[in-house]
Length: 429
Ligand code: UD1
Image (cartoon, rainbow, N blue to C red; front, side, top):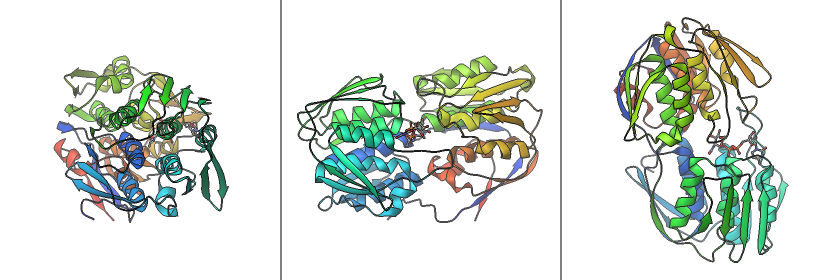
């Protein structure tokens, strides 16, 4: 199918540094909005048109899953047209679901619509242990009984009570999304979700569902009320810009920018990063959804102590990238990782480039160095790849990043955007 981007081989990136960034780019649509919204298209047979969808490996994995479930999906530039192709199939093949954790969110809608579903259990992940117990316990309260057999979740809908209250043990993004996407189609059931995640992608999902006819209140807060409806309808919807892509390029601009301008940035979505920029002393302006970052001498910057948290706190998905910036600021900084407590795969690689980072429990203590030096590196996951790419662009000499294709899961038009910023990298397989 045209427009597809699949990861079939693991490529390498070769970079000569240090380089300087100068230019203007536009931030793409949000991957983490697109994925749950695509899963939610299973709630209707009617036609749905989604705009501002990034063409990324993860999005194409979700498309493959939806096609297996009976949808016909067509790209039209950055829009997707989703239509019914055949009867809904709720027994999905192992591969695509196992490949990407966000695909587990199809389980609830498929089970509600077909009465039964069989979906692979997502596996381990290089950023830490990622169980789905909150999903399964919440679905049970919504009337979905599940059994795990041979690596698959077999789920059956046995009927939901009139009133359901689910309090999440931790404000999990995926579980909040999955339970909302399931509860909206439980006709006659009122669901109250407490201790929910409040991420902008959840608000985006809820706005999309409301445009399909769902009844949801409280999204964007920690308490959400859903009144299930009998049917949901076709719609046309535009997805929010990707705050993690924006944050990544903003950090790149802060480290190596003369002047980097990012279009299509929503200030409230990246407020926690801008707050850190202010504490550090990075020059930026934010106006009319345009973020401009101007370079500044490293000696004028101040170290900081930060913690990752659920929204509106500083996102774990920007932690590796921010660590590169902090490793170049004189003095002692620290990052405590509260969401994925062992998400420090990038630390050893940065230390191999000359950074001074020491991990103690779930905290990384960072002593600023004056420069990084190029080295052969291994990328282990999506955001670690982005961090190593930024580090390689500022480092002295040649860096080769192996297994770098993780990066295509989350950064659309990466080479084009880097080129627009005047940055040169070489990709090969
Ligand atoms: C989503 C994002 C991911 C981001 C993460 C945290 C998507 C597609 N992915 O992932 O990029 O890093 O939010 O902002 O949106 N947990 C459990 N049991 C569960 C579910 C989660 O213990 O059933 C734990 C996880 O192990 C983790 C924490 O809760 O420690 C947060 O995970 P969660 O918010 O669910 O992350 P994802 O939705 O998988």
